[in-house]
Image (tube, rainbow, N blue to C red; front, side, top):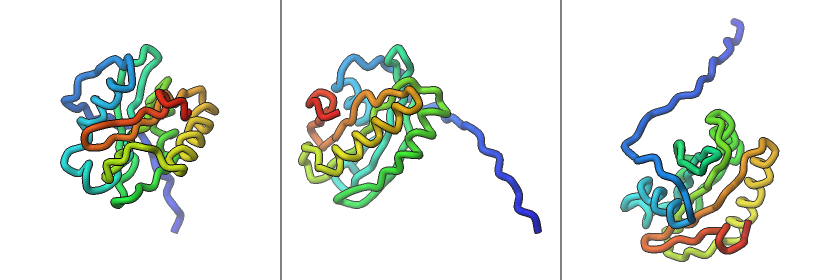
Length: 145
């Protein structure tokens, strides 16, 4: 039996989230909070916010959901979404259920690796946001990327 090729396509599902322009990290964090509910205290999840050249949010995607101490992040999936949507920029977002907003060494390493990968496609990693229940940290604001 011959193997069959797979047809891939881009799909989009409109949500009730208003398209907003991002002027600062607080705008990104506030938009990202729409993805998280009571689960922000239970397990880590990773999302990306997709941006156009005018810094308008054009969409978002859930990348992964993990356990209480981490979530796997496949950088190839992030690049795929960014390329397929013709995004000019990406904001990476994940939460820390512990309430500690400080990035781990792994967070910093992953963020810089993601920045370098996206740069190959002329896509900017604009920020990496860590959310907690009541606060956030912007790696861009902290000069960590």
